Amino acid sequence: MQRIAFANTLRGVASLSVLLLHYVLMINYMQGSYAGLSSLPGAFYHPWLVNSVNFFSMINLGAFGVSLFFLISGFVIPFSVSSFASKNSGRTRFFINRVFRIWPTYAVGFAVSLAALEIASYVSGTATSYTLGHLLAHVSLFRDWTGYLAIDGVVWTLEVEAKFYLFMLVFWGAIANQKLWPIAVLCIAMVFASRYGVGVSNPDTLFLNILFPIKYLFFMCIGIVFNYHYRGTLTTEKLFAISIFMIGVFSYVCAKEKWADIVLIAYISSFVLFTIMYLFARDWTGGRVFSFLADISFPLYACHAAMGYVGIRLMVGWGLPSALALLIATALALVLSWCIHIVIENPSHRLGKRIASSLDADGTKAITKERSV
Image 1 (cartoon, one colour):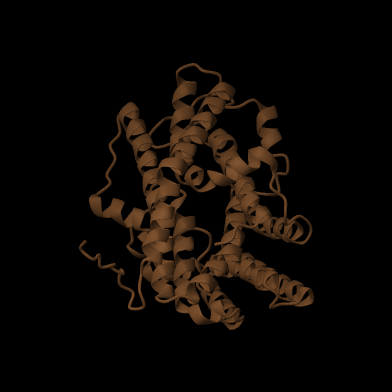
Image 2 (tube, rainbow, N blue to C red):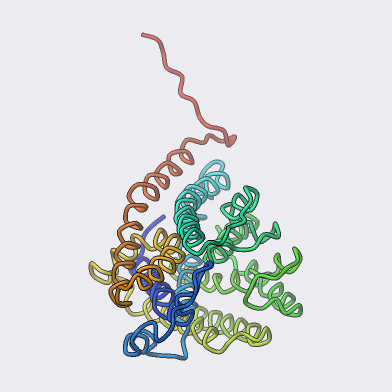
């Protein structure tokens, strides 16, 4: 899959947004209370730190970062579909590539979260109650279809990503040929699903859980429209008309489902930023900081939340200044994410590519017969 500078760099922006929300605003809001750990009295962070991070209070930083990730995936994944569609066993190759791109890294990140939760459980004297089935369902990224509750707080977005891959596989030929009608089908499905008031959190029935990701898939399809324009299928006029119509329908559905204003504004803001960067700064690399954050964005997203909540709470409880605890937790998250990126993410991605490229026309692994000397 080709790498486009601005889209890759926006991953760094997205990961930083989510990190700041969790490590500053959420912990401050919870006063350190998490996973059985009690809240701490008094102000958790100094107000200037909270106000600096929450500089524009009408935008939810977490929703902003997540929606950027969604747009980026919608933009880049069709390149992969088109590439594999021209090869034998294209769907199988795509599936293998995506499995090795996402699941190993998330599994390690999830293991980090579980370790943090076990530490919190030990310190607080509470007990965790995860079954093997719960853990396997969680790491499968189809937990939402099994009835189990989320454990780490970030899995729901990756579950949406997994459903987006299913969407690609179902409408494989149409996406490969840059057709718009699958997006229209999804639009109709989204409006239909809004009648059931699915909202912004996972519901408790299988039917509603199947409907839950549809609006996010439709939002990701805005990225597909930009992909079609990038490859010359759509004119700029059509890009504007279609994308503005899509964000309008999406906003209508979200308002109907009673989304909080700061969440909906965050999604609209990410769309505006993505559009501006696409039109005027496609070659933006963001410098070393954002390039680094872009490289580790997925491992960071997968592992940071629980370890940060628990780590910062424990350090502050031990008497460290909260700002120092924040710096230490952030540094640990960045270093660990870089290690996962180097040791797990890159090798597993390369392995997936090798396995996918070794498939023959029947979708089975090609075996080269060696002649004896």
